[in-house]
Length: 182
Image 1 (cartoon, rainbow, N blue to C red):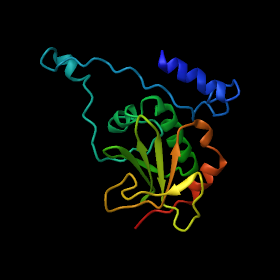
Image 2 (image 1 turned 180 degrees about the vertical axis):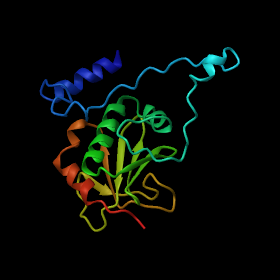
Image 3 (image 1 turned 30 degrees about the vertical axis):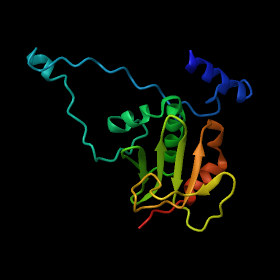
Image 4 (image 1 turned 45 degrees about the horizontal axis):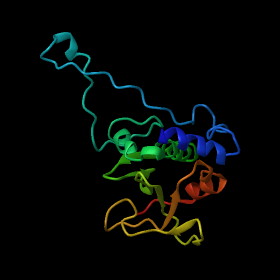
């Protein structure tokens, strides 16, 4: 019931239009396909050929469709999962060479060096960006130590994302400005 109420609230705050009405169909977040039940290999020799190989944990995923560790990490976003998928799709449209790498509670984003990290939680999303000397304001906050990467690494700026309307032209400009650390 809560998810439907949240969905209706977001449509209401979007002027009565569905949240992704202005997003091209290819860029709109999609619900992941249902997982097939895997039959143990010992049960049937034919079933062994149906079992997919395990995903490689450290391999970057550069396609906008997410799988494996990245998909499990997005599940932690709970109601913000569609927003996280929209953010990643928008970043991919601005920077086609960007690769997404799952970390413990964030997604490191680079092309090839890390220029951003999307912190995932059930309360909000935090997009940490390497913007150098770009000024801070009410929307663009000072980055926190660790910035979604590691305790010794810092991305200079942070956006707290809670609504699809925040993925706007200014968001696109900031993603385009971000420079890789190191």
